[in-house]
Length: 228
Picture 1: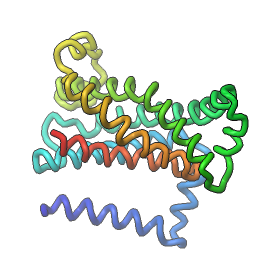
Picture 2: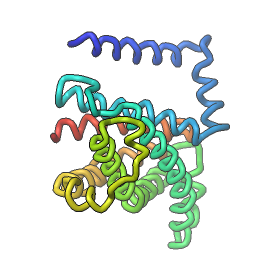
Picture 3: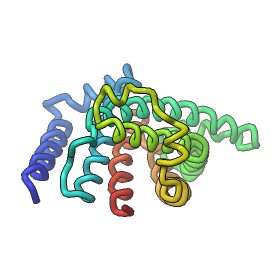
């Protein structure tokens, strides 16, 4: 292991200790901020954790956490924006899918889903929410994120480069690896990873759902690194 690996492990241990020790009040502050500023918190959760997932993937592939042109800060900005979009989508689908199930005849779907205690009915509704959100929202989000990755790399990994207009037609036609994007990222990770993973997400307490979704970004980064 390299020095950077030990630094990362130490940082993770310190953060975990701060949240685990009651006297620090970090958990209370986290819950308060999540309740009162959910989209700002979603920005920072994804900016930090999902970008960390990409850095871990780079570490697995090339032995470093960062390199010239990788663009940690631009990637954090993109992930932060996507985090707010994901938080918004979670609200929309958590409300909309139970209502949709009710229109199909499952009249207590919303009640089961909103209950604090676990039940098989709640699990079924959570699975339906996960399937519909990941089938409708996720492919668009994932493809947009892939395009931003290419855009960041093409512009040297700088914040100024990120702000330049994206050449979407060129990226779509010539630079996206559609075999990887369609046949693995969309066709395999969505049903095999995201369906069950977000089912777990939606049965967690509301204040932990976006955080858990961001942690899943770390896991996906590792999966993609292993695939490559």
